[in-house]
Length: 408
Image 1 (tube, rainbow, N blue to C red):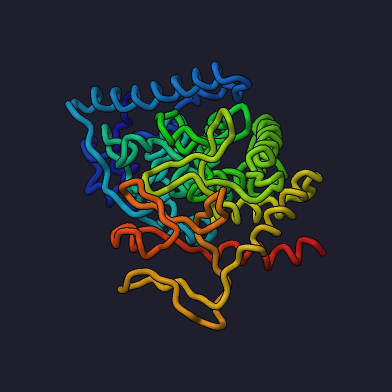
Image 2: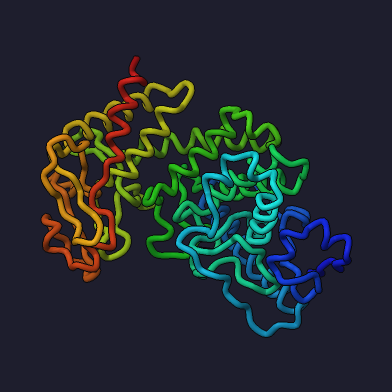
């Protein structure tokens, strides 16, 4: 990969962005954006069987790895470096995604240009990485090698919407092309059965499970659904990609119906992860047991209720999940978090709560710990995990409120 010679005029035009890299010399120029290169994945079609799916995964893995190797060779570097770490991505997500005035400003455009340098050749982005400054040649695309790229922690879906905002606000095809590449990546990452793994290319272990945890799939459904249902913000997306998105949405809806956990024959909600072959709920990290997951399920239902004309099986899935949420709400208590150890405390007017996880067999709230032990009482969990994980959620309350409007 070669890097463009940077002259004074170029520096002036990109002043905000290059200021972040401490000058206009080639040594400090940002890494080249994948959006400036022909899309090597444009000819690929979403897989219809697992053999083809794994072949796509392998191709994308090699593509990302080879890009770093070429950058290192071109820059004369022996080893790649890591970018700065951030809890999310190092920028104001709400402004970057929704504020057209901000993204059209010099600061916003510099951010969009920076995000272009962090987009992997496969089309996605990583998590826990500060993307407010441009990636440098030979620098890794993310801080955690097993999450390059990923859908975890709002990665890829967030950057997709930033690129959509930039595409609509600025007369620059690079941002539109970046969003299209990201959508294509999302479509290629979908399992033939309609689910999505946490990371793609595949990384093994629980990362390969169909991952609802932390709203990974709910976020992807909003992207795919917008493309499939003609969201005006995505007018720049090609007809071919829109057709693939429509097919993707249908397969995803079929997957949601198939994975909705049944107890004694009655549909309930969803687990945090499901096996990509059997579709049964699975465990992930030691403190994340096999269980029904309330917050993630709530966001799935909120998405389903946003569909323009949901089919009857989806309407039935919504009704069943709503019924389960109604039956399991906890009232008169507030989930206290802060300096003290999290706990439930009495509060008469508090909004209803739900435990994050419910044991499928006993139908009771369940709490996990780092040693793999599972308890029915939060107080038995170690102080570290008790304070470091969200064990209760108000998210299903949004479902209860929205459901009333949806049924009208």
